[in-house]
Image (cartoon, rainbow, N blue to C red; front, side, top):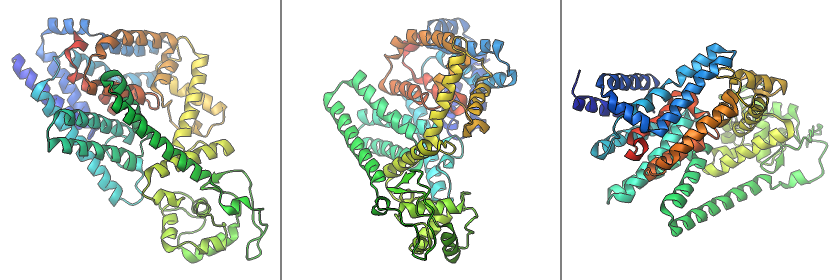
Length: 503
């Protein structure tokens, strides 16, 4: 219909639009990737595309993965969910087919398209910051209104790689601007998104790139030094969490100052160096709380948490008894914090590392002493991984089929009487999900094809290598290919590969 040059221009425009939409609109993203496919079909040039497809080992691995998902329908019992999985993963088949059978984007077009992508991610991050600052009690998971905060964090990592690469070859003042943007993205994923995954990705990717690509020992030494400092800070916060306050080490007092009996659960739960469920006098807390706050003691905070346990944890974190004396020592600002569902004053401080450590240690405490997992991010993942391994062990060779992973996973959780049995959560590990669905045989087929493509992938630029490593690391803690945003992140940048990957 059009000349090859016109189709190329349409391709570049649609690619720029997809880069902007993938972090800002699911509906628009779906429309744009379909239009990319239509343009690809109308372009023709089938002999050239067939040659590129035949020579692209990475494309063959991706197509094999999708075909195996189709084959997995043969032994699935939940056909409806299996077809839904194939529908969600459809861009994973068609986008690589389009991108890897089209000439890579290079030169000025590459810079312009990636600039649009980076600018969009930056604007969305600013929108997220404004939402956090202006919407009371907004959960950090809802900071980004368009896609999940985890998927957006991966895009922030990609912008960091692009900025560092641009700064390495740019000149002032642009170099400084690129570095400042990279620093902003790092601060955003830590302070606003609280993304442990992104922090792990950045640490792992930077080390591998330094060892494999640059091999500059001063930079490696700097990475080791920074990691060592981070480890020391981490150890300091862990010690601070478990540094017991004097009251926790004294013999338990039986009565409050008003003469009422204390209830000491003695379950071992520790937060901020004190036992959460010791020195409890609920009646005194209720009476004193009713004098200090209009929110009912047995009611809910503005974020939907129960007031009583929030108050207990807040008093405990301050090293106060959970009675009328403890409540009376709270400031008006602290009362407001509790009314807003803040259970630890550390959470309102300006130290994001301290907050992250305290949240993780509290999760560990609850899991060790009560086996509770609901609401705890890292502990939930451990529970889901262990249950998925159980599914894999009972269906080792060929898996349970494309549509049955969720059903079998929740059967195991129900048998274990896990808090997660009534949820819709999946494995949170892409490798385990694939093993559970298609077994060792299916996993081995795709692994062999990917290893076959690895030598060519290794010759990519440092940014492309960082992107590939980001995908591989993120799949350890997320079902990255389970959503459109994750699939787009895993496929979009194939358009900017070097020629070795498709030749």
